[in-house]
Image 1: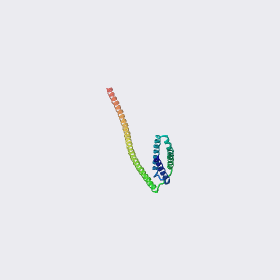
Image 2: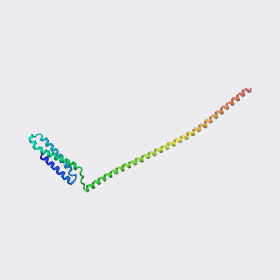
Image 3: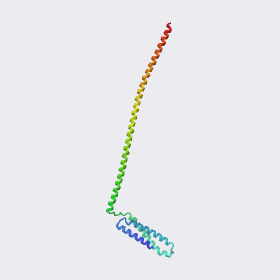
Length: 188
């Protein structure tokens, strides 16, 4: 029971010190002391269950007082969490330096990502230029093939005219030969 009260007293002392300095150096110690006192109080309450009722009545006011003290300390700790913490100039400068380093690292990372993206864009543009050159080359070949096809069609038309003319001449010659042969046979 006395050790529980000592833990509570230490927690109260740490809390008072924290409220005076408003520094966060003692806050974790205070929380640990409160938690430790609460655990010890739970052990005392568990031990009181094994004590006869006449003996319990001696300890009940003390247990109630300790429980109230712990509850008060917890509510004060909740309030303390909302108190702005005083920071020394050195800590402020160190924090600003750390923030600047972090921002510099972020800037470097973003710059590297931008450079990488730029390189990818240049690579993609080169690929597109190569594809356009391939398309131009293919288009040129297609146009050349179309011109050759047009020339072949013209040649085929000329050949067709020549063949048609040759056939007509051949037919005329055959008719002439037939007429000559008929004339020859009829003359005699």
